Length: 557
Image (cartoon, rainbow, N blue to C red; front, top):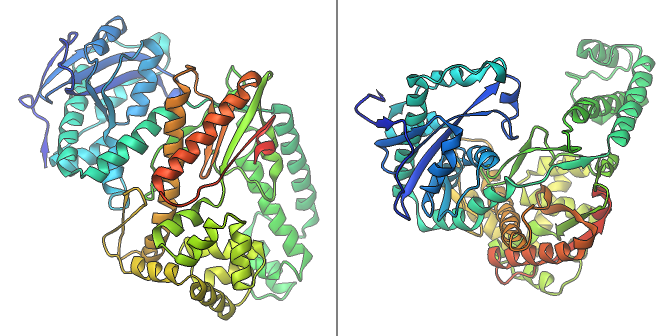
């Protein structure tokens, strides 16, 4: 594998000339960061170090003075901007200067997931350089940009500038290779969904947290945990002691103390039920503890890092902290803590039965289409067809959508495997089109596609292969719909306002925060954006959206 040589690029430490409109210009920003701030790169942290740009992958212009940044990006006006992890670069650049009109934005990392989601697992610039250019790209020089404090920023030397130039050059070359492999569907997906969604997520507001209520929940959980811990005749945090007690005292003969095994004995033995409750509360305390309060910034908000297409299905991911896994069923009080700032309201939009509608589009099942067109409660209607309760029916349908096995469904419903097999059989008898589609999906060997053409690559040697072949098209279609709704919302909102109001996206749900006087205006744009996206992703299928106004998240969902 080759390495970069001095003959591969020429870099000049100066502002570039004006690039012709429509040029593909690859750029790379380097910033000085402390060790602590390096953990928060999704926030506006760090100090400007240098910025490199190239329009041919060979001649690279590098600036090392922040005062030259505006002139540099102005000379990239009306071009196609390309960067690796563009979200980071754009977020930081916009702190210092105004970004001029751009023909289009591409991110080589996110675009490669559009090309190869599920086929490859890693998408760093090192991985892409090896994949497309057969090039070993050393990143050791990056360490030079980490400082102990911003008061001790070192002198910018030639090696640092060269490192910056290499990243821009390699990014440009990677993108040219990606374009050679991109099909019309890939470009359409990027331009309509992931690309504009990337720009929208970059402008999400943080969540406004009710710190006192959050602290109270934490203290209540801690008190209950302490009470439970002292009630056990063993250390609940020591698996060996738990196992010994279960086997010797309760005579259960358990092989391990995992949740799956202990759950079978919770109804008969209260101490086992208490142990499971203890573990749940302990997880809540560690996951949703006082560290959230410590993440509150000066404006009273917590900001998450949003990744537009991290999952192979194209689903969005949230981290630092994860705002998509905040529980709703067993501990709804956490959502009560996400509130509107004084003078504001929360707007929440929710797709009704989103994934069953994408299933109807993908499978073309006549019975399912008929029920949807009757505009009733789809789960209630299916429940009548298969003789189950609405709650059971929702679990059954979602289980089948996720490619769940009879064993998994049996565990979820609390029935034996034979009954679960009969339930699945009855469902497929009523919705034979879904059955035929599922069989066809299970036989796919290379990739499956969402309703909008996203390719989700399959690994036939993976035990989850068949499940992914059924789940990813449904989950991915729903994700594409929600992201397109965000993209449309962002475009429409920016016609009137500069500050984008969305604060959360949780699968089929959007949450915004606006001034009270703009509540109905926001409600209308959110609803129309979500409906428009549904019509584009699954044309011909009725899409239902409900948008509510409240003072906290729990009011709108």
